[in-house]
Length: 201
Ligand SMILES: [Zn+2]
Image 1 (tube, rainbow, N blue to C red):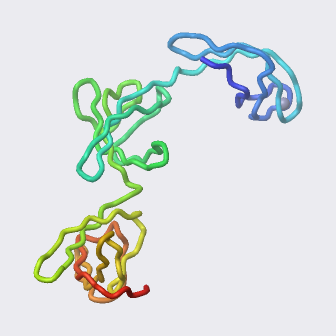
Image 2: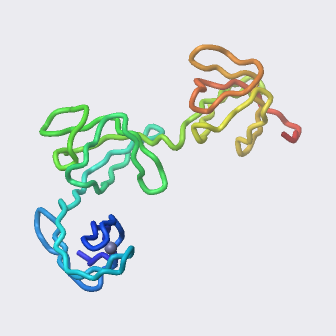
C-alpha cells in the first residue's frame, strides 16, 4: 500500500488534532494498517516519529438497482463502520440508499462493514417519472429520468426526442393536479398529449 502524504494525528507538542506531513515512513500490517514514520505537525511544525494503527478498510460487494436493472460493484468501508438500511452513501458521482444487507447468511437491518457479506442499494440521485402521452388515438408510455427535486408543471412542454408533449395533469399518491407543479419524486404518473407546433416554454 502507498505511503500517505499526510495523516491527521494528535500532536504531543501543541495538542492540536491536525494534519501531519509525512517526511518518511512506510505502511504495513495485516488485519490493521500500521504506519511507521516521521511526521511534521502542520500547526506547530514539531517533527517526531510515530506508529499509528487503524483497521484495514474492507471492500464489500454492493448490488445497485435502478430503472429495473441491477449492477454489481464494490465499495470500500472502514472495517468497524456500521451500515444500515435507509442510509445514503456516495458511489462515484451518484448517491445510493441501502435497501438490504446480508450478514452471516441472514438479512439484517444493520451490520458492521466487516460482517456485511452483500449490500443491496438503489440509486436515489435520479428517479423515473412515468408519462402517458396521447398521440392521435394511441397512448404512449414514456419514462423520463429526472433529479428527485426537479419540478414538472401542468402546461410544461416536455421534449421526448422525436415528439414534444404538453403535460395536462399530474397524479401523485394523494391527488391529481390540473394546475401547478410537483417534484419528480412525488409524481406517480403524468398525462399529456403530443404537440406539433414548436412552443417555447
Ligand atoms: Zn503541533
